[in-house]
Image 1 (spheres, one colour):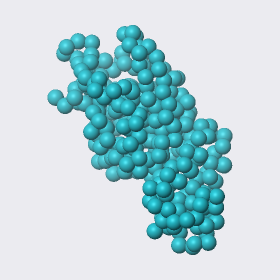
Image 2: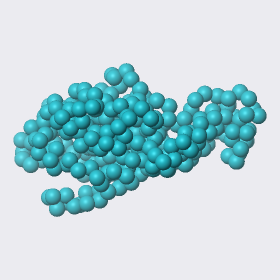
Image 3: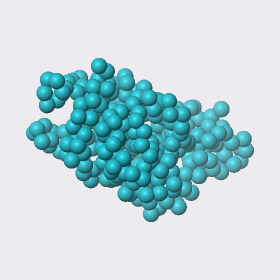
Image 4: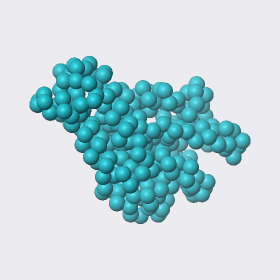
Length: 280
């Protein structure tokens, strides 16, 4: 059986126990807040590998205005998610098939879904997710961080083993950049698991580059990019400038600055277009 489908089957058997054990997502609150700060009012968010809806509930409580499409491969998990967050939309879906949805979203959340994908599958998954994001859309990823060489089969018994995959921030960061995403948050939460093992959870919030076309008015370009330099730039330099701007816009972490951030986002859009125009 495919390792991801095997994991879904086993988690389905223990869905109720899993919901009780991992229901509290408080330790991930700050990173979820950072992600949600990038979602516009009434935005549409896709959640992949939602499990019993613990993160879904956290998203809905923090931003009741956001529309959530919550998905999972395990039917039993999806039933719990429907119960936990009835106001969300729910869909049975293998996260690896995200590209088949044919929709674009303001944000995508995948909390610990990467644990069940090896490095190659995770890279393809991130590229597919990037294609489902609207310009300026945000991505939330969390996974257990460790050397991928330590990945292997784990579980309570021989007949309930799950292939657990570990990932490193540098590897995921490289994939994100290739997929056109700029990281605006990289955080870690460390704790001791019930089995006594030390665990480090990697939390990443990234955003698509705000590339909204070229500006042909040279004067407007020079004005919009004032302070950033006006000499011709190579494409890689343009991307770095755009990524730096995204770090500034995404660094606020609270919704109280939303009006200022929208203005800043408009500046980023204009400047990104100008920089790319100058680079041609």
